[in-house]
Image (cartoon, rainbow, N blue to C red; front, side, top):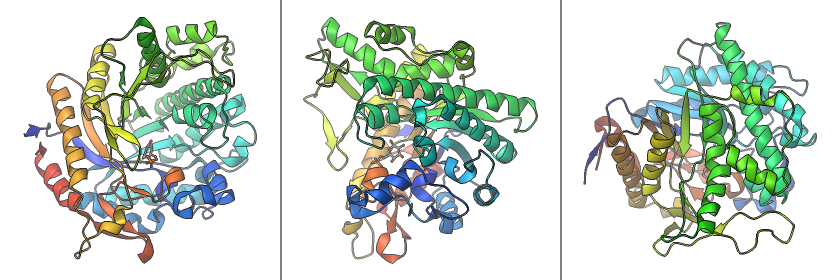
Length: 465
Ligand code: BGP
């Protein structure tokens, strides 16, 4: 099997500030919720490694961008940290800003077009103490942070994103109670989800204002990145199964897709929430504010699909409404280390959904990757990890991307997560995603895995084989 990707299709690296930078107390950085949680409760974190290490990128910035270039990558997305750029009074922290100026300049020198995202789960801890995303003032604080960032780096960066995976906090931190602040209350999750949509829109308004004032480059583009997940159900679904699909698709995918293409939230979802007694913290004038939320393009992080069916009960023990329950497909293949289903065709299905339901919307695959537990222990005599499974994983996904493009999907690039192993939320360094490994025992030294050579060939030829 062979597939060709267009010559202008870009390959790059996906990363985030909190997972790579380290230096968590330097350059005037404040504490984020991850710094706080991983420090206070280190036993919860795999290898007992907290967020303060990242993968030492601050000290290896030049080397890492050289690595990206050597792999033939031309773009990268990282995030700047709210806690590094803005102080507690909402003013710019000069030491943090200068650090990011140096980082952006380094990427440029190495020929990497660096995309900047503003938020990757890293709420400042002092703002969580004031209610986090449940508090409207935090929404306004985010808009202030966005304004400072656009003004400070507007002439150096041309691709901007507001949020990475804005659905993760409503789902994991406020519905499932897995992450800080460990809440299991769907009503509060909805308030958070609404406020994040608003925060995105206010930041998008700041983007327009900065552009109109000549503070951004003429070709500056704004986007939003989400872990969109194609929804599936049984092959012969009942109406109730289809309604479960509608609801999870609506909350997880369409909420953001409608926001960024139409500047509004999906009516059927608002309607269902209303009927189930959930009211959102909407204020007069919000409709206009949300209308600023349209963007130029979209980032599509793809890890796994959603498979759901009708729930048994419409309410759980804690009184939260239940819209769906998991459906286990008999043919599913799992990434056992991560507990995620591997289903490459999902990338095609979702790409075609974008083409059909949001015609003209440009997107790129902004994250896709395979994490493997303890992979660092499997280096051979030459120090190489024979990660053929990773090559197969990327290849399969790219085949489906190529097919979607052939059938008219407007997909313009692919960023692998994570080109270099990095620290990851509660998993710390458990699952290694890298094409390049990081040796924790030897001062975070970088080493190549087998997939690196494969990647070089891919980026040079644009042929997937
Ligand atoms: C995405 C996040 C990334 C990254 C990745 C892998 O959801 O945007 O930050 O961590 O998932 O997930 P994990 O590291 O939890 O295995």
